[in-house]
Image (tube, rainbow, N blue to C red; front, side, top):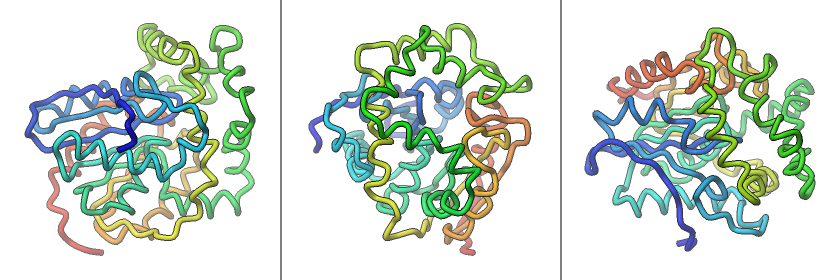
Length: 285
């Protein structure tokens, strides 16, 4: 309904159950490359470029990136792909959107899987009580500035972007699957296009537009995966998330893994997802 063109990469036959993958920041569909290969045997796996990212249209006004718009995008995409429900998987900012879609359109989500992002209500309540998390989320406030955050990413041949994935502080650790030179090049190619950072950062410029939430409850089986060495999100939020899921809830924390979990530990993540998908989770809490 928005009139926007969305780019996605799909694997698996049409007609199989839909698995929809929502990436985080600063990423694009490519961050799900390991899952596209893994789950295509039983699913139609669709990895999206979110509004403003990659080859998806990027409206110019900040207001076009309100969370309401992002939630409606997912509903519209599901319908335009010819489905009325899916397994929904989100990481980081895509995890925030996945939680909200599950809350607003529960009939569209058969199972919810979120990677390294707590329930949005947990996030907003926790950040107000824990200065350490407020500091880790400081970039949310930095991103409220016009144009300067985009400029900072481009300085010194996109040094900030590279270090997010590779530095000791925030990147994938020694025990993870380090990004190859080709992987880094894919990210640099996408985000070095003219204006390519404004849409992604505009997502954050609207974060205060719909929080706190009116509705909180998640009613479908939910899996939360968490890399304990996440430099941006404190692990305590993962356990608190349990109170908002009124169905089967499984939390798995991987001790040596970073924020970039599905790229860092793809084999373990894929195995945990398979186990969760094959479970008969009809029991209520």
